[in-house]
Length: 464
Image (cartoon, rainbow, N blue to C red; front, top):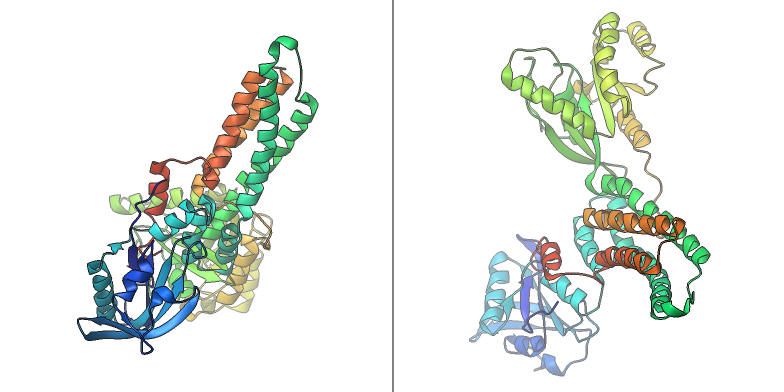
């Protein structure tokens, strides 16, 4: 993808006031451009300085000092973008940031589009497309797991594996197509038995990568946890308690929660997406019924379900409730949560603990109102999540675009397997092998279109 050959500039640090802000420039001539506004106490010209050096001075406009700054110089190809680059570290006042940026634009720079710095890094061969996408994931990482996955991808974990698979396919399709050139002589260059072994091996690896998406998606976006139960069992109170903020309205009035409320929480480095749902009950209220129907939909999406029960409730009634709740969560990890234990005796608590032992093995007693038992519940959530230890060498798919490309590549290689079993001609085999290579190449950007690239990079923040 050809990019305009101009100097781009943007504030790269987060919006708002801070101690320090960084304004980034990239493109041929950007060092000379900064020289027009930079004054060094030692009369240095930045364009005459060595790469990877930092220089103190002032940004000046018509004799007016805007700020004292540190300027860092990077020279092509040894920079993030692969081009000459400059980073100006100034004080974090939004006024100062905008004054310096406006001055740079007046001198000839152009405001960078979202993701344009990373896009230039991709275009200049500093990283492939999957690594470029991992930059956004790294910036957005909010747990140890998401950080580890993003770092692994940015260092080429996925790219290296896909490149290996693609090269193996390329070797064989080259031999098959060579056979087609000598078709009249009935020569076989590609050993069909070896090709079948390779196709089986590649199918296994692609399938493993595609299946890792469920784990990767959960780690990246949060493991969905639905809090369900009847009205007034304390679901909203529990949500607020886990989040440590008043996210949901709490009331003694039945049916207060009529919509789905979601938020994320980080527990011991694992991200959970908590979903507070409308209480399940029979009601003639049309709006409340809409909320209850949403509850059923969220149950389908959840990996873990917290079934909240009022510990004061009669045992027989809890057993009758189970006939309604258990069929809805039969494929989920279920934790039975007895709330309001502060209102029951130790003897009644022991009786409650014996309920539904065969149906629900995981249970915990809490008082959401008094924040009692919450740490035990968090421990149960970690156990239920069952997130394996993700090492630096583990390749986990977290990106939906990658998953969809892998799924298409898997279908293509499975057609190769079927074709080998049916002993079809080499030209059909070659077509399916090339299709598999195409979709693997889409992930790393070896095969790409301007539309796909534009869609990816426009989701970045300006200055990244």
